[in-house]
Length: 146
Image (cartoon, rainbow, N blue to C red; front, side):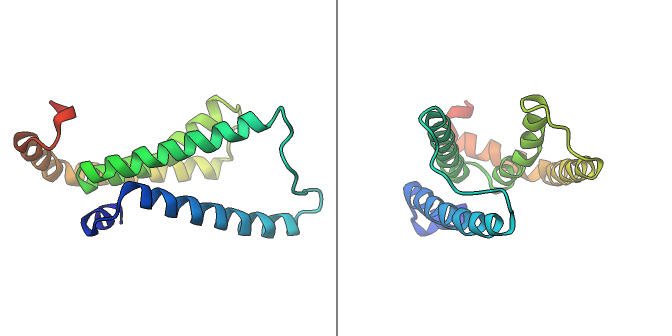
């Protein structure tokens, strides 16, 4: 989707703006639905001590999305898709290491299936992506890889 938008001429900031608008909109909608179903949850404005953490998460998430969109335009689609899909694995890894929360056994099976699919796609496209990367290096489109 990002590569198609790039071919049409969409700027990276346009993709970032649409991600922000739709992300905030859907987060609010889902949040209101989830809060209406829960008995002990209420919306509130973060306190002064919590505000820097909330803003830090927002800024780092926006910066990460900007960099992912920009870099996805520069690399082959298979490699960009693998990188975008691997964030699920890293999220679970951080959940275990940083937060100390261990998921249920079914979740581990899900992580194994995601890893299996990533490895399968990587193995299936190794020849095609490798040849394309060599071609892009020879043309000069991948200056960072040199």
